[in-house]
Image 1 (cartoon, one colour):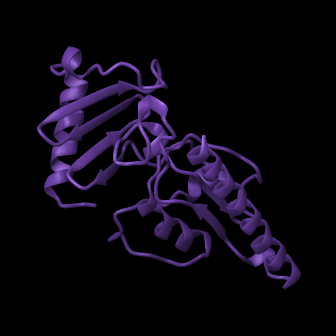
Image 2 (tube, one colour; image 1 turned 180 degrees about the vertical axis):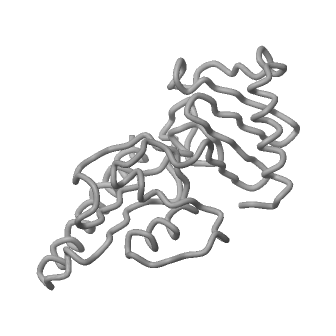
Length: 191
């Protein structure tokens, strides 16, 4: 209970600090010319699946908040389920600021999603924690852990990630393609 109370206290404190930053931008008269990004580096399991802290790819650990306030772009308060990862922040912020960029970034520009022009700009996103990695699509999450341990979850039918389908579906062509893509991504040393 103390760990959970500490976590929620930290969340409340972060929320208060963001409010102070937004108030200060308004006070200085630059709120309408400032892009604000709020995110974190990982979630906390908080005893979901009987676990605490990070280092696994369950949503409670792997998913993070990403809030982008871009004045005069899109509809304020709009939420999206678009796939993204933190490598997308640089190309997105450059685009929102009206700056040109080259195509050498690992990430993709999310501004079409923010503007409401489309629902997705990527087919998959990846994550890595030490020797563990994951690929996530709209429907599937495939995780590779040391000792060649694989976990596969159907994110649509099983959003709580209770059933590992990997052994049952390992030879399914869609899952084979996901595994091949993840192993290719690992080989590129992307992280």
